[in-house]
Amino acid sequence: MAGQKNAYIDEIFFHFVPDSQTKVAGLQTGEYDLISYVPYDTYEMLENDDSLIVHTMPSGMEFLVFNKKEGIFSDTKARQAFNMAIDKEPVMKAAFNYEEFYSMEPALMIPDQADWHTRAGEEHFNEYDPDRALELLDEAGYNGEEIVILTTRDYDHHYSVSVVVHQQLQELG
Image (cartoon, rainbow, N blue to C red; front, side, top):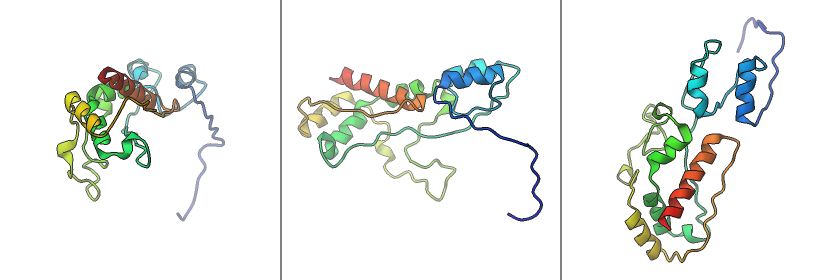
């Protein structure tokens, strides 16, 4: 925060490019020097390009947030049913393409974040039991009303998660 400061670069330009494929093409042609949030399905192609240096790091998490004020998910049993209705491994693979880009953790904070990490409730993590999910939905009074899933296309992995979750819920009925 103090002392001599040296500017080693005259100018830096930031371009906000919402389309992932446009970012990748711009990197490959040299239009951009650096990009972030690369589509996971382009990883091998970029990694095998000798003109590029690829750095990877954990960059986020996937989770679903329920409207607990009104509607079917105001009932705890409906949220439990949703948890049991979703097979999480295919969801993560659809979002990140490669297992090395994600980990399945029962806590919001990873083990390296020791001050905040906890294993409380891990017995309910990654429960997948579609039959029990249907029972819980029945107990919650679900009668087939539409469930709305909101997502974004700003990040491909968020959108991919919603597509697979939607598909699994449709298969459940």
